[in-house]
Length: 352
Ligand SMILES: NC(=O)c1ccc[n+]([C@@H]2O[C@H](COP(=O)([O-])OP(=O)(O)OC[C@H]3O[C@@H](n4cnc5c(N)ncnc54)[C@H](O)[C@@H]3O)[C@@H](O)[C@H]2O)c1
Image 1: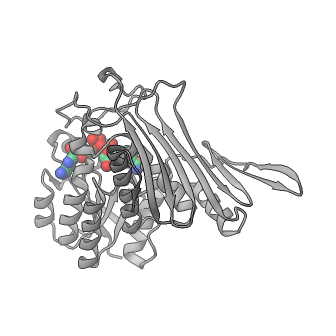
Image 2 (image 1 turned 90 degrees about the horizontal axis):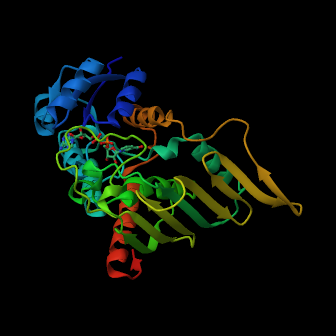
Image 3 (image 1 turned 30 degrees about the vertical axis):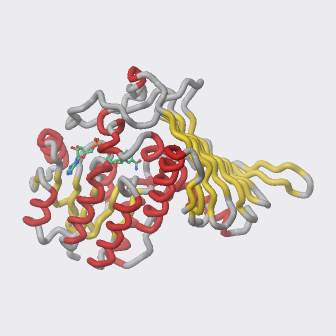
């Protein structure tokens, strides 16, 4: 069988998960890498034995007409240009989250995919977790009843990675667009992808620049020249209302004077509730008794999800199977994020 020739644009940290995913998939051939940073490009090329190396995405696309698909793992500001260029060159694209800097860019990406007739997937990796599968099964089995309220947080106490992450011109924003995106999308996915209708949000940039430090040891890829820029929020909080009446409150931070890092998702229905922190548990009242259900093996996010999202993308290309995270969901997320930032700016509710 002819293998899919795959390229990766932006070969920094997260690209390794895509690369490993393609290497594990027998239908794929890792074919080319692209990065604007020659040192990163050389290092990744040597590590994975890839010799077609390009410092420009346009050059790679022009010189490799035989390339079938690409992953886009660049800084956020390059997601839309690289994705649109690849789609226009007839490649299928799997783009990391957040889909783009804003919803307008995301819509242009979807339009390019439709015009080219190519697959465009978004890297909402939390959709591939055992917790997400279990939660979806509970919802589909009617165990949750009507979902009407959810809470999600993704809080780092002292975890601003700096570099491009804290430079708004390249990231589009701070913890909301980087971390909040994961938990907002997970809630939407579990709840059946309801459309957002209104948002009230607040963002804060209160803390000293000395807080630009990631104590978890995350090292930003070497191409970062403006390491000291920080014009993104430290903290974002929002209340999001969906068309089915469900309301989600979300909190996310890079830096916050609290006691610890947290990541917790809670979803409440008329028959049951789900908590993910980090394992999933189910809570309800059965015959007047409060019932708490836990599961024998861990359902927490463990990194194996990245290979599953690559398999889903490859299967969509080869067999036309549905994408678990299509462009439409990337766009809905960008609409929510845009509205949080707009609401924070105007200090009023934004209707979508
Ligand atoms: N799904 C997840 O769990 C997850 C985790 C981390 C990061 N991400 C996302 O992945 C993306 C990359 O994050 P990272 O942590 O790997 O960052 P990184 O800085 O380690 O890597 C990004 C790479 O992109 C390169 N680059 C930037 N612009 C480019 C362009 N126009 N053409 C080619 N290369 C370009 C940079 O030189 C750098 O090497 C971001 O969008 C981020 O939000 C997702």
